[in-house]
Image (cartoon, rainbow, N blue to C red; front, side):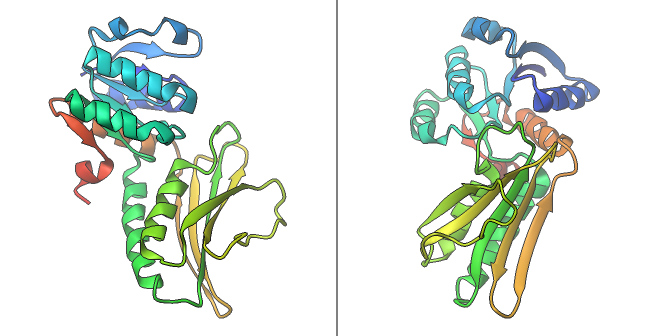
Length: 247
């Protein structure tokens, strides 16, 4: 495949390394230095685009791919307030897109476990649930897209939780309680070069149940994004990792 990398930071470079090793060709890269030069015509020799840019750039990148009729895999988060209009355009114009808050195969299995546990714990009123996520200091958005996905899965099962409340922690001793009973707390921490840790915790006065996913490197995300790109070529519509992994 001929691939365009929309975003050439740490994730883009990780995708490049895996893609080249598999025999794919990176024919176009968008970085901070040439972002203003990126136009739909830039994609004329591209089979698929992979976006790991920034929340402020993602929607524009998606629309440019649609205009060029190039399939796009979107790993950037923080733009979902415009998701409905992107979905509508994708379907109306028979475009091709895979999006995910996290392309790691392990995280998507973690999502499945989270759904199962949430359904079980919905009947256990003595347990309070919260989510903690830790990422590197360069991550722009908080809570992470992965944490928001976990929260939405829990809210679907728990009648007592209506929404989530994100809080960026600067002090390790900040109390970790929701401000309102119907809010699911997501605590975000930005530490060093942490790739991504996510915890879902159910705690009562008696004990605590916790499930956890720890990313050891960015290559899990990159590998999943490349898998999605290979899968998407030749298809029309909007998809997630659930479709690719048949979860």
